[in-house]
Image 1 (cartoon, rainbow, N blue to C red):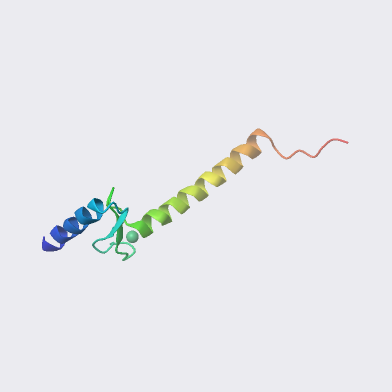
Image 2: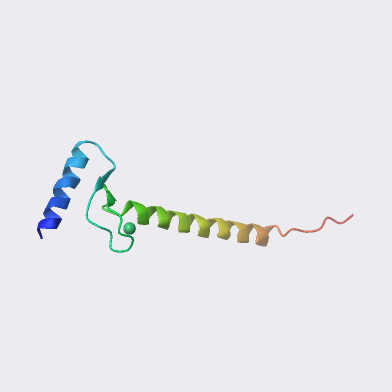
Length: 76
Ligand SMILES: [Zn+2]
């Protein structure tokens, strides 16, 4: 596919220039054009996933903390 060849060429140029992201082909899920040179993932989606992951981890930590040290009312 010609589109793909152009994409790879742009990616190579970006890599040579030491850039982290490049303008690649359109993301199928969010329509974004910026992609990481390193793994070809959509920047927008990666951020969304990172945010969701972060939220999950936070909730997990909170849950574990409460399980280990429940908020006891101090006995007076
Ligand atoms: Zn995306």
